[in-house]
Image (cartoon, rainbow, N blue to C red; front, side, top):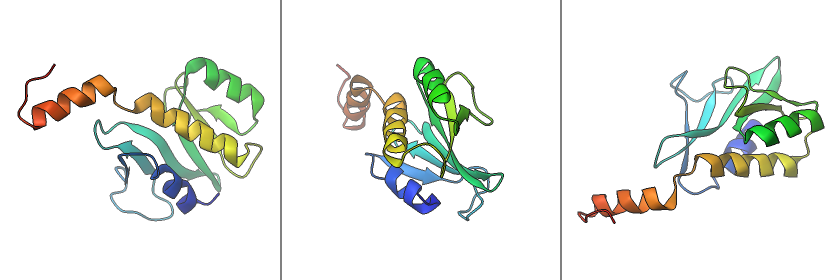
Length: 130
């Protein structure tokens, strides 16, 4: 999977946008941060390190440990909380379908709750929250 394919896959999730907060512009070496529009939380940080394409993904702590033991290319996250984030180096022993599953689970962890989103929608429409 290329960098652009990875970004495009992330953009298939609802209300996601790509951001470049560290460099301000998109280029092949900038960190791309995939965020949810409603809460601005990130679920995938895409970058190159030591010549390899990498992505940091949010993860349940028990699953994070399991994935690190199962795949040599899954390590504690670079520049992130090591308990809740993993780094996946692409092009190694992590199958593409497994990577897509990790991306989906990372997205679900940061996605706003339905109740919170309904409350915000009601406020924006001039209605009182439930």
